[in-house]
Length: 304
Image (tube, rainbow, N blue to C red; front, side):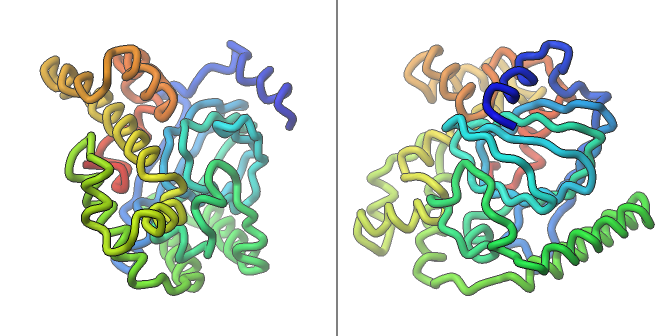
């Protein structure tokens, strides 16, 4: 699909954004063996002819398309076509997508360490695009895909989810590559820095790292897909959207969220860029697909 065709579908008002009754999305806790590498598994299903929506900026993902075909448009304007086993690099802005259904997907989100350990790719080089799953997995992905298709057709409910995640666990563990201990230390410090506050100071990060500033920037880019300043903006905006998306968010909490930004227009721009909606379009939209992605209980890597 070219940019023009994508825009035509995206602007078609008859193809509405996902409504609560148009899909099911279930999140599944990863097994302990993958807890350092995978944030969550998820199973998505929709019987609609067309699905179009937005996924907020996030860490790298794997999405196995058991049914349905589609395209995603990234911040650069690049449009990529899904592969049966699609590897989506870390995204530094909200990602629009259009899918011809019915759609059935088993997916998982990776930690920064997980993306590198399983794909062997630099997050900076693979950010905001689909990575080549053939280059990552070779022929092994074909048997993995066939196994998941068999499970989809032969099992249901909890038995199906357990069988699929067991199969995915075996597949992903077999792909693990060693990660340098020094890099693990740098990413651990960076994660703690991100978790300390919604507006962490860049200089505080560099002061805690065991390497020089330039090397730290390179390593952080290799695992997170962007420089520390951009990383802070991404996590601040998506976490702010998560807080505003929470039905229990009080007026006082919402005011504190706004104080994280220079002013209200700045908050609106940042949340729209990284989360895909303005704060006002997030409110009152319980049950929509984007709100499910922004639920604080679903995405472990971006929680605080």
